[in-house]
Amino acid sequence: MFATVIDPIPQHSLAVDGTDARFPVRRVYCIGRNYAAHTIEMGGDPDREAPFFFQKNPDNLDQSGAFPYPVKSSDVHHELEMLVALKSGGTSITVEDALGHVYGYAVALDMTRRDLQGEAKDARRPWEIGKAFERSAPCGPLIPAERIGHPATGAVSLTVNGDTRQTGDLDQMIWKVPEMIAYLSEYYELAAGDVILSGTPSGVAAVQRGDEMVARVAGLPDLTVRVT
Image (cartoon, rainbow, N blue to C red; front, side):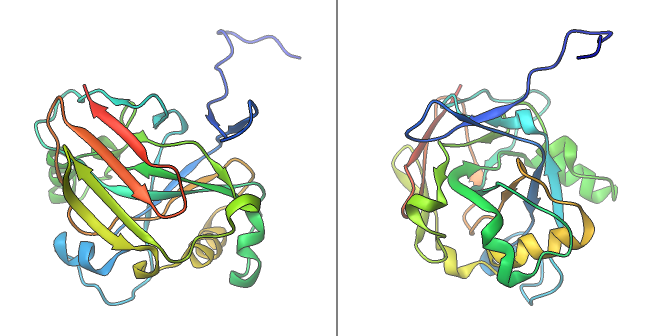
C-alpha cells in the first residue's frame, strides 16, 4: 500500500442480483442515437453511419430508486437503455468474440438535462454538462449473462405515472451489442468493469418532481425510479 494525500476514494460498484458480491465500475460509455425512430426524433439521419459515444462517470450510476431533480435545469428527460457490463476487454475485439467479454445486463436510464445539452450542441461543445451529472444513470441490479444469455430481441418500454412514453424492441438497435463492443475497442482499451449504455428508443420526454418512472427490458427485472 502507498500513502495518499487525501482519503482514498471508494470504488463505485453495482449490485448483482442473487449475490452479495458487487460489480466494480471502471468506465461508462453511452452510444448516441442507436434507434432509428429516436434518431429522427432528435433531428438526425437514421441511415447507418458510424456510431458515436459520450461518457458518464462511474458514480453517475445509481441503484437507490430515487432520481433527485438536478440543479441548473428545467427540462430533464428520461431515456430508457439496456446496460451492458463487461467482465474483460482488450483492443481490436472482433464482433464474433465480443459477447464473450460480457458479464451481464441491467435496465438503466440515461437522464438528460436537455436544455443544457441543447445549449452545448448549439455552441458545438461537449455534452457532459447535460449528461454526466450526479445520479444521472439510475439502474437496476445486474443479471449475469450465464443466467439469461445475451438479449438481442425483446420489448423495451418506459411509463411515467402509468402512461406509456417509450416503446421499442432490442432488435431495433442500429448497432447491436457485439458491434458496439468491437467498435469501442478500436478506439479504447476496454477492460473488466466497463459499462455500455446501449441507446434509447423514441418517446423521450420531460419528467417532473413526484413522477414515477417504470423502465422495462424483456428478461430483466423492472426498474422503478421516483423523481424527487
